[in-house]
Length: 83
Length: 373
Image (tube, rainbow over all chains, first blue to last red; front, side):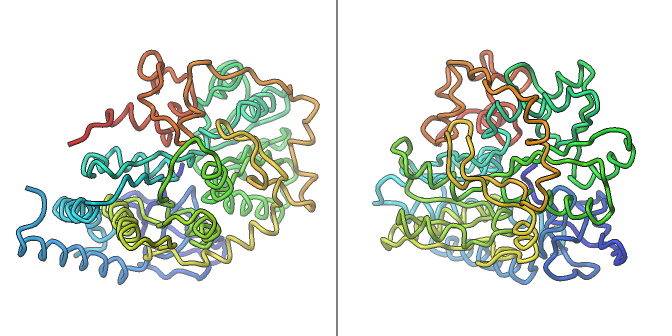
């Protein structure tokens, strides 16, 4: 129950406040009743038991990955890291 | 990088996992023991699944928390669900996690096998279609879960009212994370030096729910995502705070969590539910202000009061040797339990920690026992 999964908004039914999402290739319909702001098609949202909970900030995710890359590069340079 | 790589694979990159684990090991040198409670069963599973515990140095230990809604559900509530399901006019609807949870006398699956009408659904909203399909029946939604599922039950209640559904009642068992964790920190059972909070709870509530714990217990709390690199970054932030002698609230999962959380969901909860004075947790006992019930305006929809005379008050005790309650308090590990694996297994669960896919015992059973490198 307690897993929230990133999913892409494929289409939006404004009348019923629902959206069709794609979760790693699996399509399903979710309610947008809990969304603080209406999402756009192409947005990634967190899905939990049939509801979209919030948008996921892709720029933020990319920034995190950049920091991991920098850490790896720094360790390679200094020869640190696991043997 | 494609969006799919970004959202799914990037936070499982093995090279990055090794690099971050090495940094943690290096920076944890010279620190005393750092016992980190991952509050949520989903984190316990991710840690075991990806073997993150095996990458930690000796002095960093994961303590598994109470964040498994099915595990903390006392038998008396499951007995109530089964009693409701056995009423001839009732169709009981609940989330799939509840299927095998043992009550005093069998589970909801057993009750269904004996003829009770029980529907296990993926989403609370599925209850609307079931209510429409059974107009001559009294449909009862048995609502379970922490803050991650509470607003969805509230949304179901409002949707049902808007649609004029007249045959849908509710049995509310929603519980709250901060009060449970506070009770654990208050007890002498478990020694905990830091917390990893689950991101999805704080997507709803905001990270703010942990601020009182940070202030009162002076321990670092990091709200982290569920991917391996999210969890390790959470650990790294804890170690950084420990080195600096700090105790702060930190959000690791900034890609969707804010300090304030989701105002739409919070407003929905506030107009649908009110706090119970006290709620009995399996393993943790009675905790004040730790659960929700229907707000006064919806009290006429409360199956708990409408069917109160059908409920028996004395649930059967748990198996004497079962350590689930102690495990939920962070004071024992699944492998300390004499029933673990023999005879308690996910196929033949004796305690709720083995039943739920989020239970610590199920995680240990599935991903193997703790092994240190």
